[in-house]
Amino acid sequence: MLIESDALARARQYIETLRGSDSAAFGEEELLDRAFRLRLGEPAVSVQESADNLQKAAQVLLWRNWITASQEEGVRQNLRFLLDPQHLWQPAERSGGPAAGLPDFASGDWQEKIHTLQSYARAVPPSLFIVLIGNMVTEEALPNYKTVLDKIEATANLSGADSSPWARWSCGWTAEEDRHGSVLRDYISYSGVADMRAVDRSIFSLLANGFDPRIGYDPYKLFLYTSFQERATRVSHRNTGRRAAEAGDPVLESICTAIAGDESRHEAFYKNMMALVFDSDPHGALLAFERLMRSQIVMPAELMQDGEPDLYAHFSLVAQQEGVYTTEDYVSIVEHLIGFWRVGERSAVGAAARAQEYVCSLPARYRRSLVPRAQRVLARLDKRPYAWLRGRLV
Image (cartoon, rainbow, N blue to C red):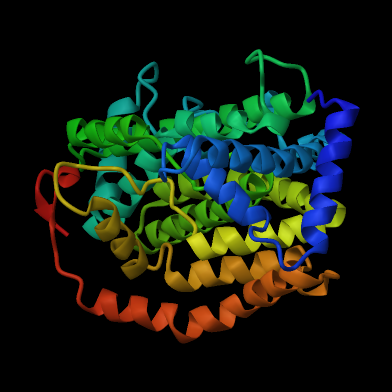
């Protein structure tokens, strides 16, 4: 990332002035919010006001992108969380690894393997199959997620095949993640349980509807968001594997456990990168963390559809009912990240100190209100038909 020294000096001075005044009309996050809304064409304001807002927000983003770009050596060191392709399991590998239980049509026992897999799959509760399909649909929308990573200036892969550490991570991460949707799709297809045409429509709709994690062009929020989501995905796949084992399906257990292992490595990368941001700019990191939590973490599958209303809302409740991903898991992730980044130990004043206090109070507040509320909603959960399971009520 190339930044003119004069431009960086102006941005630094502006940030210092903004942080030194607790009476400023707008803080860093307010400026970014207003600028992002202006880019989306709202609200209606004068041309001069729009220009001023965008210019001020550009100073904030330039500073945050510079801080992020300065962590290139940290990125290089953390590339260790990408495995050598020779040591990675692959969805089509049938002689070992998590996909060993899936059929190899070049082998004479492929019919037997399909029969065995389908007998295992029939023992899996339909509700867990809904969670599994929803997880697979989420994984298959990978192009949307890479787009988010590459649009941030500090982490952008300008040519599409850059040699920078950021680009190496972006491409390597995408390659590793792509295996997840592939192996889950194979399992679900061979199980014979799902209507794959309906599943494909949901994948198409999720990709076509796009994905807005509500981070704008802010690299700080990018790392905050990905740290949360990688851990959430790890929890979801791990618990799906655990439930599959309880139902007597070792094939699905093996697949989900392997995916969770990948997500754990990816989580470590993003958490480590955000830790470097906290060390370099604790004030800005605290503000970004507070704003992301106030707007709530948007789940990647929020916009998926299946021709029936409220698919995502119902799917997430079924996941909670199955113990795959619960509100308590959400709270525990927030709690873990607060501890990992030592949020409560950071020296902070003014708006950053208020952000610190807010973020550190969240786990207790969530357990008093959010968790009981989710349990009340879950108690009223009704069955609905799923096109994924040929109209079966779940």
